[in-house]
Structures are given as structure tokens and as C-alpha cells.
Length: 336
Image (cartoon, rainbow, N blue to C red; front, side):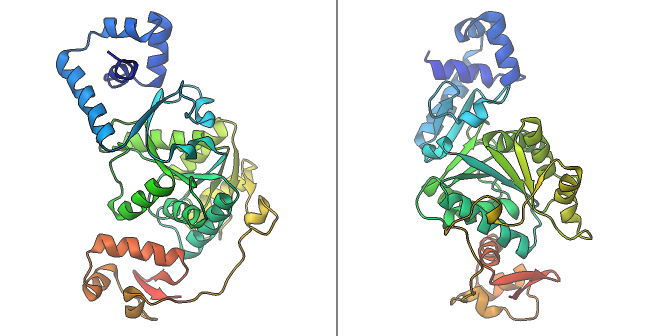
């Protein structure tokens, strides 16, 4: 029985996470003694072997915390994941990194700001860490991928590293595989549940040297991630917003309390020629853009007009929003 299989047998046992694993090592001394104490049945052993076989068939790697490729920022966190699975360019895990989080229901202006910020960080050789959710997360990943080169972004998933969620970000997932990395501590093939998202937020915060929070409600997963970052002694930056917008309550409250530093632009971090500046929008030829004007058009109507499924339309709309070509208005989309 090899070392990876031993560790996974322990970690895939119900009720055993990083903290419990560390306690078992302290109690029994090593993995062999823990396996002897747990006495896993053959069916369970076979199921873990199938997970490993599936991972290898999908070019997924397991990285133990003793591996030189394991991110140093995460390893510094108490009870960090003993093993993470990674798909893509694992060199991304070795760079300085910034976590970027915020609401799924971000404004076009908020997404554009985050995308520009992420692109600037990637251009300065940072990896941009986020959770691949819609809205702010998507803007962070897409912005980072606009920068030249590879190893720009890390997507931390709440399910298995092969389980694409949300489905609207399928194309983004594969683009991240090409030029960044997708990671998870969950078993390969596992569908995420609510508790997994909270755990995912732990590791988004833990992976980064510091964190930036964009638009976020006061009681949100993004604020939870920011709290984790503060707990881990990471510096937090917050993008301010209008006081009447609930999506500004989170970052504004962190700035007001002094827990976060005000973030107004890329120049808060960099001051050179690579800092992005506003540029004139040039509108390209596009089937969706051809159907939009000043009257809002819904996703379902657009899907019917351009003969594409709604999930594909949603993904296209996110990209167009990030490019500043369209914006949400009254339940639909209009040209900017």
C-alpha cells in the first residue's frame, strides 16, 4: 500500500479532516499505525483506489503538504488540508498570490473594476485566487487570464476538482486549466454541498498573501472569507461602494472598522507602466450585441434570438459585461 493511498484512506474516512488527522498522527505516530487502528474494509479501500484511478485518468495530481509544490501560504495555516488535488499548471501554486472575493450579483462597474485589478496583479506575476463563482469571482479569473503568460489564477472549488460548478463557468474552467490551476481538498468526482463552500472559503483566504473584497453584502460568504483572512493575519483591502447599495455594506463596514484598508485602484499596489488605465471601448461584431440596444432584453429572449442554450448565453453575457460592452438593467441587458 503506497503512501498516497494510506493518507487518502485516512482522510476519506467519515469524520476525519485535517484537525482529526493531525490528532491521530500525534496519537498513533504514523499513517501505518492509523490504518491498523481504523482497519478499513476492502470495499472502502477499493473505492479510494477508484478515486485515484479516476484522478490519474483526468490528469489530476495529488499534492501532499510535504510536497515542494504545496503552496507555502496555505501550509502556514493551522490544520491546513493534508492533501489537495490539482488540475492544470501547478507552478501557479508557487507564486505570490492575492485572493479576490465578492458577491455573485455584482454590478457591471464592480466586475470591470475587479477584472482590471486582477489583470494588473497577474501582469505583476501574482496568481489571483478566487472560487470560480459567478459575479466577482468570474471577473477576477477572467481579468487575470487577460494578462500575458501562464500561471495567473487559482480556482478553489467546493466539490471535486473535476466537478464544474457553476455550469455557466464551464468554458472558464477549461481556460483556467490551460493557463492556471484548479484545486480542491474534496474527493475527485464529489458534488459540493453547503458546508463545503464554507470550507472552500477558508482555503481561498489561506492561499493568499493578502485579500481584496469587492461588492459584498454584510452577511455573505465573501465577508466570511475576509474574516478568515483576518484570522490568519492576512492584510485585507476593501473596495468602497455607495452607502445605499447593500452590496457595499460588507466592504464599507470593514473600512469603517479599520479592519480593511481602502482600495481605490491598482495604484494602491503598483505605480508603473503596467497599471491599467481606462481605454475607449471598441465594440466588436457579436451575435448578442447585434440583438441589444437601449431596451432591456432577457437571457431567455436572447437565447431564442441567437439560437443558443441559456447556460451558454449566460457565460457569453458575463464576458461581454467584463469587457464593458453591456450592462444589466431592469431584468435584462442593454448596450453600454
